[in-house]
Every structure is written in C-alpha cells, then in structure tokens.
Length: 97
Image (cartoon, rainbow, N blue to C red; front, top):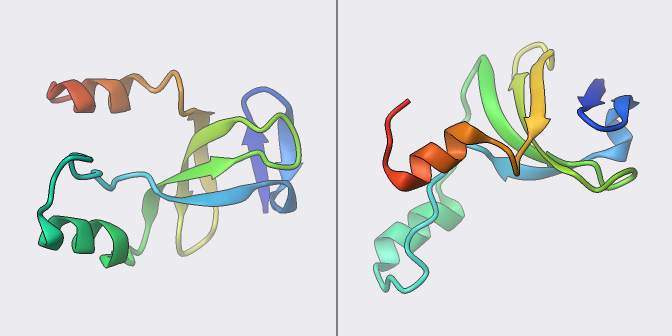
C-alpha cells in the first residue's frame, strides 16, 4: 500500500504508523464522566468503505496526516496534513461544515 505524504510524496506504508480513528471526539480532559471516557478509549466502529484515519509518517518527516482510506480495498483517496485541517478546527469550534 502506498501513502502519499503531503511533504515527501508517495511512500510505502511501512514508513507510516496508524494513529487511530479520525472521527472520534475526545471528551473534555476535566470530565469525570466514566461512560464517555470508556466509550472514547474502548468503543470502536468497524466501517466498510471510506474511513477517516490519522497516520504519522514516522519513518520520514514525522508529519501527522488525516487520511481517507477505503477499508475494503485499502485505496487511499486523500492525505492532508492534520495540523492545517480546517474541517477539524471548525468542528472543535462547533461550526458545522
């Protein structure tokens, strides 16, 4: 599987580390709601089709990326830097996109 790093270009997947589901919402760090934290830590979806994921180019520039990967075919339709992700920033501010 090839992943196109926005900085380094196409690289083999062995250079990357999967960092988790890109759709999950972290509870407020000050929250003591055990159900919310349990769901965040242990609750996992297993979707078929396109899925938002976070990957790090650990064997290269070390950039964190937001990757859209099809879980059935492993085809990657996009890879953008996580830092400049306007969708994630708008979501944190409560703006619907």
